[in-house]
Structure formats: structure tokens, C-alpha cells
Image 1 (cartoon, protein in one colour):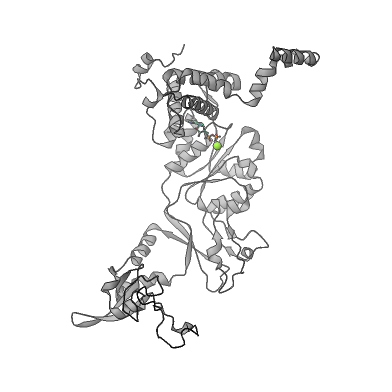
Image 2 (cartoon, rainbow, N blue to C red):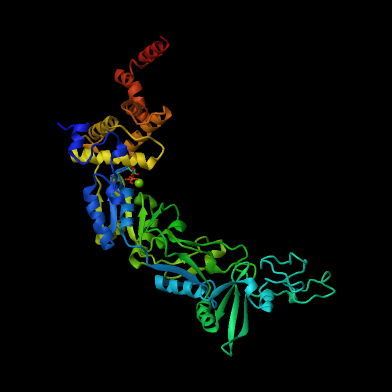
Length: 486
Ligand SMILES: Nc1ncnc2c1ncn2[C@@H]1O[C@H](COP(=O)(O)OP(=O)(O)O)[C@@H](O)[C@H]1O
Ligand SMILES: [Mg+2]
């Protein structure tokens, strides 16, 4: 017979807890998963070897948790994916993959030079960069077009008597970078001043400028998959766009001045965002025909991004060979296995694993401790409910045992833990609405009654009527109404 966790039995182990606040919970996501030892063993292999994984089992047993744990075990991404403007053919933007060191070099180049205050630079330069009024000589922020002192337009070169009548666009000057010469050790040297914010300028030597320009010469870019990103991407498979990306519509049709360049309108799909990471698809069979595209992406490790709406200006735009080297983790219910595309399934098996998650675990002292950890975890995750006394926790564990019997017809502890989590939260709500410091047994008992599904409630309420059978249904209904009144 298995002991409940009274204080005596807890003192035997590392736990001498009176309530769940004293039970330590592991930090790492993988150790927070209880009972799924086989799945965890495979998950560790999968993350180390970069394999695919199909998790099969009923809802609420930890499949999403396992997928997230795999993502937490794999190394951080090392690549950044950008689309570059293609000057010759704007509707065919070019893909570029950069590693961390290249990104860092660019950032360093952009940070070259020395930043000084606007008042420290030569006056004529300060005027050109918009820090100083040409008329009165007062200093002001570069982003205010009119001099706050005399009201002159700072960016107008010459004053003309017709200023008020003719908007003379030719004379409007605002320079971002001004080159000038400077005497250093008796030799004339080129110095460049660049506006760096509203009241600061960056001073660059000629060599520094050349370094910077090397990066500026590369085509304009849009980073579509940044280097700092999550290794966990979940796709619902609600649409092709979500999974495979898209090109946004431009109402001005890419018009040279009014429109936006196609490369700025590229939107990556989940397959691309999961590059170097985990792509998790819950209810994999429900994405239907999209499985075919997924299969192609897994085979090629590249997938083009194209406009998917034929009536949109995005439809003429396409980016080839966008990397999408991800690990697929799919979750599926046993009953839905038939909805998986056979080639997709064999692709997963050919380079990965299929795992049946457990619905229950043996009722041992060790596993009861795991349940205790689970209860403590759920309470902490919720954050709005009090901890549970050990007596209440034991009642919850008893419910887990009851459910193993009633749902799966086994003796053990259920691992359909989402349901148990629901009971914990309900009991917590009851305790907190009463202002109780802990979840006490009465709250758990109440939660067990309240937490029943409508079907279960129907069963309890009408079971006798159903047993009575249809023939005397009318009579029992009448009796029921009578007793309600009485
Ligand atoms: N094995 C488990 N260990 C710890 N908590 C679990 C476990 N299984 C389920 N849970 C709890 O139930 C919730 C739902 O689990 P989830 O991983 O989404 O299940 P599934 O994806 O199988 O439907 C989790 O957020 C967690 O609170
Ligand atoms: Mg889930």
C-alpha cells in the first residue's frame, strides 16, 4: 500500500514539506516534464542529432512541453537571413545569409569614429548638418527646420526676396555627411562629419569612412530572419502564408516613387523562421494538403517565398532559395494518424523518431513525488493562486489515481495532466476567493465537483432517469419535478 505524503514519509526523502511552496521545482524545461521518461530520452537524442519527431498521444499529456524542451536544448542560431534589393530586377530580391561575425563587422563599421557635440564642430559644417542657423548663428536641434531664435528656415541656403512667394526647392539643403579638411601635424587631412542624432556629430577619418562605405555599398536589405530569435516556432497551419511566407501587396504597384520596393514587402513563413530551430505543428494531420509543402521544405531545406494572392501586386515577386533547415516536431492524436501524408511520415521516420506518449505512470512513491512537483509547478506557473497544503496535494494525487482507473482502466497515476491542472486552478480560485493562505482539502473537494465537464454533470444528474429507461421516463421526470418542489 502506498503511503500518502504525510510529514513522516516526506522527511525520509529530501522533502519535508508542509505545503507545495516548499517543494523545489527544476529550472530546465525538460525536467519539468513528469512521467514521460521514454519521450524525454528520445527528445534528448533528437535535439543532439537534429532529427525530426512525431509525438503521438491524447491531448494534455505534455506533447507541447516536450517540443519546447527540445527547442531549449539546441544551440542558438548562428545565421541571419536577409533579402537584398535587386537593382536589375526588383521583383527578384536576392537572399543573403550572414553569420554572426559578419553582422558584428557591420555594426562595428557603423560605430566607427568619435561622437562629438554639435558645438564642437567647425561652424560651416554645423550649418550644413542643420545644427546652426545660417542667419543668426544660434544652435538648435537638427530636426527642427526653423531656427528657434530668429525663425529662419535653417535648411534654406540663400535668402531671397521672393521666398514668401515662390517655394524654391533648389535651395533647400540638408546634408547628412560633410567632408572637409583639417590640419594634423602640419599635414592636411580629410575629415568627415556625419549627423548622429539631433545634437551630435560623428567624426570619421578617411580610412574609417572607406570602411563604412564598404558596407554601405552592399545593396539595401531587409532582415527577414534575425540572428537573435527563438529556436521554437509554432505553426497552426491555418494558411499557406503562415507556413511558407508571402509578399505583401503594394497599392502603388511598386511605382518608383510612390510604391515600396518588393524586397521590403517579403514576409517569411514559419518554415523560414524555424531555420536552425524547431518547427512545432500541433495536430499535424489537420494541416491537410499543406503537409506536401512541408515535406518539400524538409527535403530541400530551402523554400521560395512568393506572393500567394494572385490579385495582389505581390504575386509577381519571388525570392528563391530561402533557407529553412528546421527540425519538425509534430503532435498528433492516435485517431488522426491516418490523416498524415505517408511520405511525410516516412520522412520523419527516415530521419527521426515516432514516440507514443504515456497516458499514465505506475503509482510509486517516486512518481507521487513527481506529482507533487507537478502541483507545485502548476501553482507557480499560474501565479494567481495560493500553494496547496500537503493534505490537499494528496487529494489531487488521489484524483490522478482515480482518473487512471476511470479513463484508461489501469491502476496508476494519470498523465493526462491538463485536466489535473484544471482541478488545481479551480481549487486555487476557491481558496483565493475565500482569502485562504493555502489550498485546503475542502477546496479540492469543491473543485472536483465543480470541475466536472458538462457530460459528467449530466451523468450525475440524470443517471437514474437513464437507468429507469425510456418507458417510465415521463414518470421519473414528474417525480423529479415533484421532489424539486418539495
Ligand atoms: N508530462 C507533463 N509534465 C508536466 N506537466 C504536464 C505534463 N503534461 C501536461 N502537463 C501540463 O498540462 C499542460 C498542457 O500540456 P501540453 O504539453 O500542452 O499537452 P499536449 O501538447 O499533449 O496537449 C502543460 O502546460 C502542463 O501544465
Ligand atoms: Mg498541446
